[in-house]
Image (cartoon, rainbow, N blue to C red; front, top):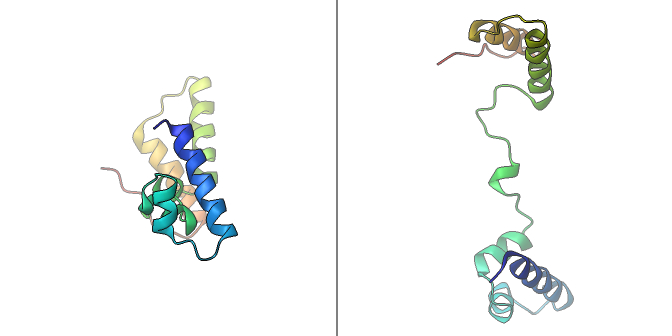
Amino acid sequence: MESSSKESHMILALEAMKNNPYLTIRTAAKLYEIPHTTLQTQYANVQSRHDIPTNSTKLTLIEETILLKTILDLNTRRFQTRLINITTIADRLRIDRHTSHIETR
């Protein structure tokens, strides 16, 4: 089954479940030939793991953007970007937010 076909079957199954409150997840999954676990996840509106930030994220998205712009700016001015310099910049961003230092591996 193609991806678009799976998606269309998923949408149809979800719509059928909304229109018929007596239709169970397993029954809808059998009718539309899709895995019941996938339908259950979609019905519960659970975010995929890809969309959820990890627990070990040290910087926020804004801080990462600032760090990246700083690195690119240093690079265009022909400064060498060493790991210790990047770590120092990241630590300064985190100190502003009152969190712990970033450790290098």
